[in-house]
Image (tube, helix red, strand yellow):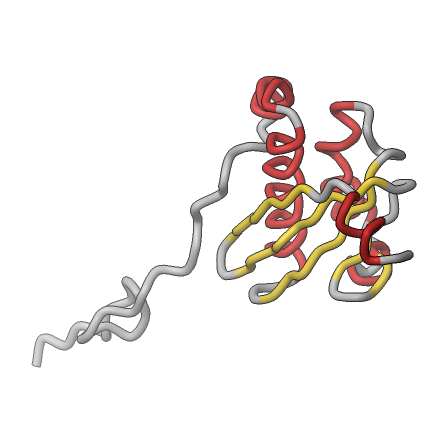
Length: 137
């Protein structure tokens, strides 16, 4: 593919985050392949049907699963966090594709960022909330 063809192709970006995982997602016109960090999506997601279905869910909601390739750079966190980050990134990229896509994605819950992350450790405590054993004497 030449540079002019590559520059004429529409590319839509979306960033997803979950816990400490960050996924930069590109939607490129294609036939529905998912590539994560240079590997096929199902191999990267360990052939787990829940993770694979979650990544493709925003596309299936809009009926676009065979029209766009999903190219992802993901880092941080574990497989679960990265899968959820990718799902949010795909949903945000679809909103960039067409603003009217936002409403059905929001109804399904794909536009919500899951803010839960590990709480920081406080001084004087063993963990975030675990105190040392109390001793009366």
